[in-house]
Image (tube, rainbow, N blue to C red; front, side):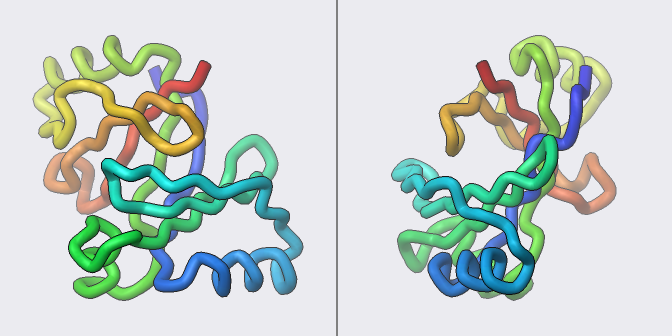
Length: 133
């Protein structure tokens, strides 16, 4: 079911400053940015081997990322795992008793179909499953 780690989502207060650090200090290269309106987030994409780092900045004070930073500070917000069929993965996970935040896939950054698993079912980690074409 799981193919690989697709990306690691990192909540940041200032996307431009975070990109500067990842590029100038760590040597990664940001290949683009996207605003996902329905998630109230601006995303910077930094490929790393077969996966990528996604830097996430809230576009509003009441967005999920803003709330995360207010509660926990900047840092890893979620880990995304790639699946070949998100609908099949959701059915399978639900049948296994996993608590789902998303019963159906939704649009994610980079054109992915995504769904989140509740941290109460995953040892406290927000896990995103995603499918890319």
